[in-house]
Amino acid sequence: MIQIGEILKNVPFFRSLGRDSIDFITEKLKFKQFKANTVICKVGDPGDRMYIVLSGKVSVSAANGELLAYISSGNYFGEMSLLTGEPRSATITAITDTETFVLDKDDFDVILEKYPSISIAMSKIMSQRLRETNAVVSEKAKQAKSASPAGPSGSLKDKHITEILAFCEENSLTGTVELQHAGDNAVITYEKGILQQVKYKDLADAEAIDIMMGWEDGQFVIKPKIMTFDEGATTQAAKKGSILVINQSLVVRKVIEKNLAGLGHKVTTASDITQGIASLKDNTPDLIVSDFKYDELSGYDFCMQVRENSAYEHIPFIFITDSNINQNMLAQLKTLPNCDIVDSEDVSVLASKIESKLS
Image 1 (cartoon, rainbow, N blue to C red):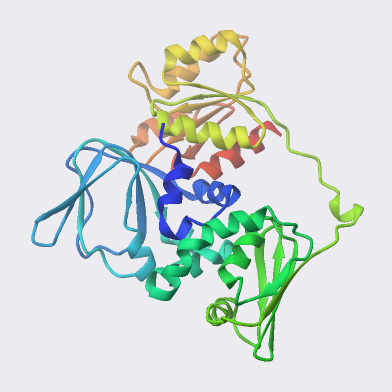
Image 2: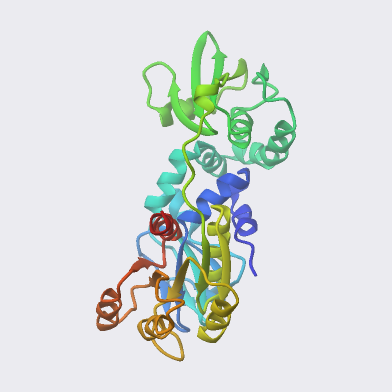
């Protein structure tokens, strides 16, 4: 099984991020399959998404048809289009049946807003000086994580702004970073490791960060906010449950299992109806997440078969569909009581639907 987090770590502008940041990005990834000999994107197409290859193999060809390279599982393509906004400079074709994760530009922009250090890393890729700095950011961020978060301070000659922001994200800072440079003052506010606001003159957050990138001297101090008992109180947690996930794709099963288990649910998976039925007999789940069709029969027929048993008739279903579903089949699924339908491309929507269904 491909470790998605490890693949993301290979993408230069995700390299300095911590585990929570990687998990957030993973939730934005959309699962997409391509049949063999399918053109995924071609020269001149808008550069509005990048792809991570989970299984299979794709070819990279120039505008004149010349074969440039092959990309297989564990690798990615299209990242430069997100960086530059330029149209595709190559044609990508699936050589075999291929499974991918897709990161759209809209979601990428959300990620940039949440983790501004990615934007900083992008600037490094565009600049030789910043590329050299980027090579040590990840290691220094790890060292910073082991240091006491209670008000570290120092010189910008010793700690570049990239390292400071990475430290704040890694340590889930709630508080401020105060900076001084050439008589100017700036304040960056964080909430649980997420950048909230940058105050520097009257500049917008992104413009201010860009200017700070060039600060090679000055001082900084990180000031965590002291939490009171009232502020530390939490709301009642959403109900957790036992969930059976039945899907023919190993990648889909693993990604869903990881996300739901991370939310506190007990998750059991099965690759087909036979395994699913066997799992039902071993442990009756609170909810079933099902593919919309199987080799044996449709998701509709499977649901009806399960509910013939009075012991299972109360179990709600959530069907994972995609853009290839036949409209008649979709209409049939919608007639089932106590059933919901979600798009397989958005795991976060699925998790939200499950939380709602169990509450």
